[in-house]
Length: 236
Image (cartoon, rainbow, N blue to C red):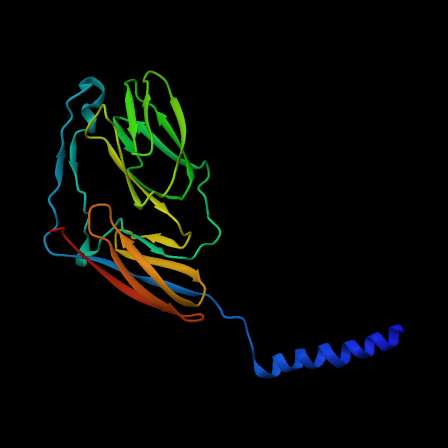
């Protein structure tokens, strides 16, 4: 077959198909957004007092009140993880990885979200012995130096993992193990926003470590934003 004949065949087959797409206005569906607000209704649980009763010379500054359920203006509930189920994409990992530090006899941060199977880097920056217990691993970390441990953490039936110190009972943190990169954590105003969601119908969970979980279903249309208000109340 000559080059000229190949060119004619290409023009007769490919070009009409392209013109058909243009004339019918076919386009790729644009992603949408899931947004909304988490609201707390009812009496807010009172703050609790941390009882510091060990290694007082170093740990006394850890004493104080802790508010497990933080509610702002108009019932705005912070610290809720909203996650789209069955959908995953590219993770945006923090620079330096996923890190927990023990400093001043408290965990820092006391709340974090990690992907399923993430490696945690855990530091003891206090001069006293600490113990890190997640239920998946339980390790002692001597004091007196910047002691480092690395452990992987995974979803094992529960999204929230309660981190405690067996040595100092007031120390705790919460780790949310996400199985989808499409998630958001509500801020002080209770709002959340998850962008770049492909069009479709999804099940969405909204979880707080100290409140009952909520679930809802949304249908995301091309280029549109669907909004949802999620209402929480105190555990009975």
